[in-house]
Length: 479
Image 1 (spheres, one colour):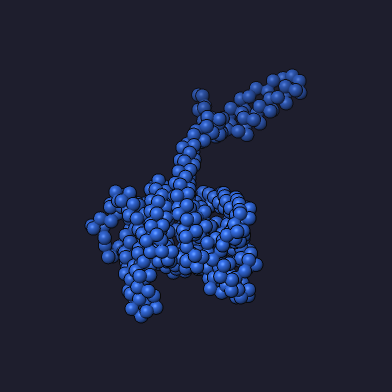
Image 2 (image 1 turned 60 degrees about the vertical axis):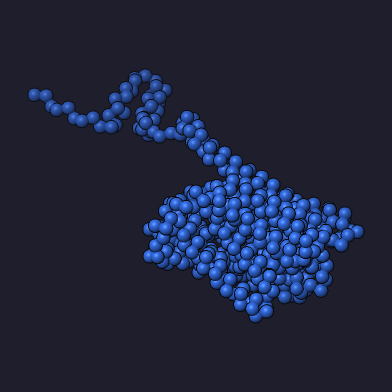
C-alpha cells in the first residue's frame, strides 16, 4: 500500500535543484542558484520603469496646474500693480508729503481693525476639503463679520459725536472696513476652492478704480488726505462687489436659508473657539509688528524723513501685497489637500521656495531704489530711494512671515506662533523706545529684528512634530 504523498513545501523547489557532480566550480554555481532562490521570492515587488513613468505622469498635471495658477495669479497682480503705480506717482507729485503720512496711518488703522473682523475664522476654510464643513465655516464667518461691522459702526458713531474723529473720516473708515471685511471672506473662500482667476481679476478691478478715483478727487477737492481715504474705500468696495458677483454661484449653495441653524452655529463656534482665542491675538500682534515703522512716525523730529518713510512703506506695500496675494492662496490651497507626513514635507519645501522668492524680490527692489535715489537729488523727495532700500530689509522678512503665519495655522501648536509674535512685538517696541526718534539707524535695527522673527517662524514650522491626521489645536472640524 503506497504512502500518501506529503504536501509540497514552499522550499521543495530548492531541494530539487540538481547538484551536478564534477568540479568545485560547478558546485559553487549550484550553491549560488540555491541561495538566490531561497533568498528572494519569485514575485518580489519592484518599482519598474513603467510604474515610474506612471508615477510621474499622475503628478505632471498637478504640477502643471499649480505652476499655471501661480503664473496666472502673479500676472494678474502685476497687471494690477502696474496700473496703480502710475496713479500713486502722480498723486505723490500733486500731494504734499504730510498727506501721504496721514494716509499711511489711516490705511494701517483700517487694516489692523479688519484683521479682527472675522475673528480669523477664515483660516478654518483650509482645515478640511469637505464642502459641508466649508459651508458651515462660511456661514459662521459671515455672521461674525456682520456683527463686527455693526459694533464698529456704533463705536465710530460714538467717536464722531464725541468730537474725537471727524464725521467724514469715521464714515469713510467704516466704508473701507466693510470693503476689506468682504474681501477677506471672499478671498478666503475663493482660495479654498482654487478660483485664483477671480482673485487676480478682483485685484485688477481695484487697481483700475482706486487710482483713477484718487486723481479725480484730488482735482475736484484739492490734495487732501480725505480724497485718498475715500478712493481707498471705494476701491475695496468695488473689488469686493466684483468678487461677490463672480463667486455668487458657488456661495449661494453654502448660504441657503435652510442651512442656517442656531444649534449648528453654536456648536461650530464652540469647536472653533481656539481660532479667536489663539490665532486672532497672534494675527493682531503680527500686524502690529508689521506697521512698527509707522508707529515711529509721530516721534520723528525730521518731518521730511517721516514723509519719506511713509511713501517708502506705501511703495513697498505693493510688492508685499503681490507676494502675499500670490503665495498665500497657492500655498494654502495645496496644503489643504494633504495631511500628516506629506503635509509636513510640503510645508518645508514651500518655506524654502518662499524664502528664496522673498529674498530675490526685495533685494532687487532695494538695489534699484538705491541706484535711482541719485536722480531725485533736486526734488523734495530726495532721499526716499535710500529709505526704500533700508526698509526693504524689514519688508523682505515681514512679507515672508505672511505666508509662513498662514502655514503655521495648520499646526496643532498654535500657541507657538502667538509666543513668537508677542516676543517680537515687545522687542521691536523696546528698540524704538531705545532710539527715541526716527532715523535710518532705527530702520536698520527694525530690519534686524524682523529677520530674527522670520528665522523663529522658519524654525517653528520645520521643527513642528504634529501627529499625522490630527486637526490643528482648537480648530477641530465639526463632525
